[in-house]
Amino acid sequence: MSTLRERMYGKLYRLRTGYTTGEHWKAGVLNRYRIACEIGPLIGMTPKAARKIVRVVLDVVIQALRRNETVVIAGLGKFYTRHFTLGPQWIGKPLHISKVYFKPCKELKAAVNDNQESRSDTP
Image 1 (cartoon, rainbow, N blue to C red):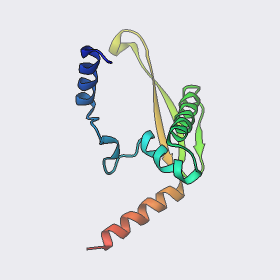
Image 2: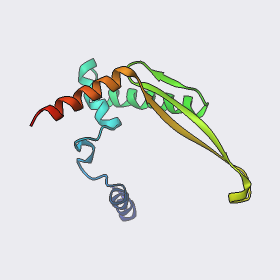
Image 3: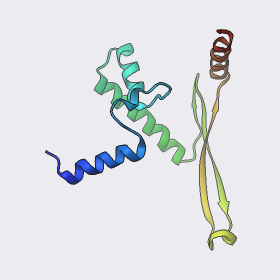
Image 4: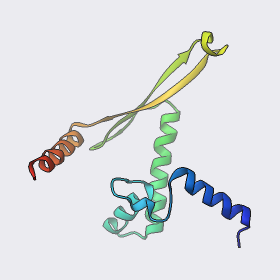
């Protein structure tokens, strides 16, 4: 049984982030949980095993980006980082910032653009 404090913290977290019951199935939102639920039946795995695989794959991508490597996923695109240094004139000492960028591949762009064109054609 959880304590009152743990229950309240969980409720505050859900209120701050907008994550409420059923939020992960909201139209237009595709997160790790939903990806796992969609690929699990396709490859004949349990939802728990599919969630673990998705989590491991995303962790590998994050670790590669932290090592300043470029991640290329065929059919999806390229993830890469760029590094910036803000000089001491703003904050007193140099600040090093890394940003993650995503460049979609041609196939993904074509698929999204074809889908948008078909939506605009229907009245």
